[in-house]
Length: 436
Image (cartoon, rainbow, N blue to C red; front, side, top):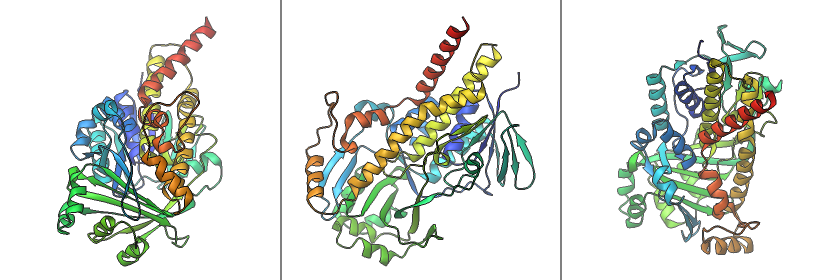
């Protein structure tokens, strides 16, 4: 029996993750990437425990750690004076086994690309998909080449071509109303400020967030503390036709005039900065069509207020790959089993409620982070300062998901691979009962 052939459209983190785990299941994998080379977009990125657990299961966690810092906690601070409102760690068990990593996106992608090469994934650059034949599981490239497979996975991101083909009409993302300044700078540049407060912050392996009216800022180490990542959000003032542009440092500093002096000091070390329009797309009603499935931002883009966007793409890729591996095993051993379209629907059923919950959680965090000063902000700060991070009685919940331990455990403690295997076994048992 020939291995199942999986054609993955898109060479981002989700597509590469799906490719790596598919090869671990013994599947034949082709990755089609339209870029001439795999150039990472962005700067820092977070790998929360639900993603680092997957990489631990597939032997990549230690390699990722070689390029990362481990975040010991995420801190929320008041925008104006840096007052500590709340510090949240992920819990002793998760910290020890599946740490919260912060890494440069280029390093993350390099580790995944190297692993694809080691496993023999066929990565084809300059391969832009123009159309798809759902009936025959084929894609047509812009150069006219036709690539066929048993399964096609659309991992082509927010501007997905495959999403439009599944919907039957163009489906561009929409503006969120926010934009972000983002960039990285060296530890040496920060040390040159000769600021004891900045030096102390750099010595702590933390994700630090300043939250304020209509804006927030996120600061954390990458590259084992040799560089630092800074993201600062504000209301979007870019023209609709402009997605990114080189930022003006003086204009950026003016936006954050009056913020915590510590943050203002850090801004003086910025060599350059990009302004990036934050885009969004409504989650699709269906992520699959026949033998085709979408993953990540192609079907459920998340607002960037929980550091879960890339992690969800990794989960998606892992679940698709594991289920297809189990399908191949059942097919090889002539066991009664779901069809490929039914198998892909199992993936959707495992992830859809979860990504909807995360979408709502991101909206909740956006509100939490961006409150104007006033009574609601004062009540928020009081609640955050008094947060106990303990299990609540059934039926009760915290006013903010950021401090809701039950919510955080459900998101961060998830075993996506284990859940995929369990769902497959449940389905196989149901098929066995119905055929008995």
